[in-house]
Image 1 (cartoon, rainbow, N blue to C red):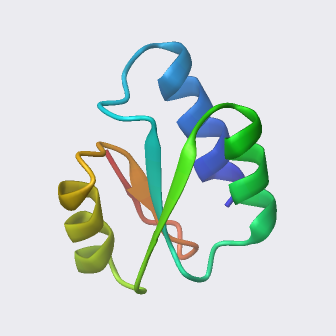
Image 2 (tube, rainbow, N blue to C red; image 1 turned 30 degrees about the vertical axis):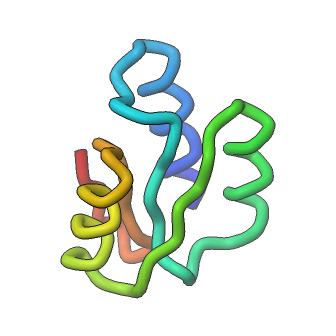
Length: 74
């Protein structure tokens, strides 16, 4: 979750996000959601698994997401 937060804010600072949303699984913690909110980013939740993260990214026109297992999807 820490890595998703840091990379998400970095991507935003470089204008590299296609939307103001980052996708993570339902296992992500509340601290990630609150941190992203403080940085004017939204956290979209999905089921656990890369295919669900990818699908949610596609549906939300997001180009950044990941899960706690360490999988990061750009």
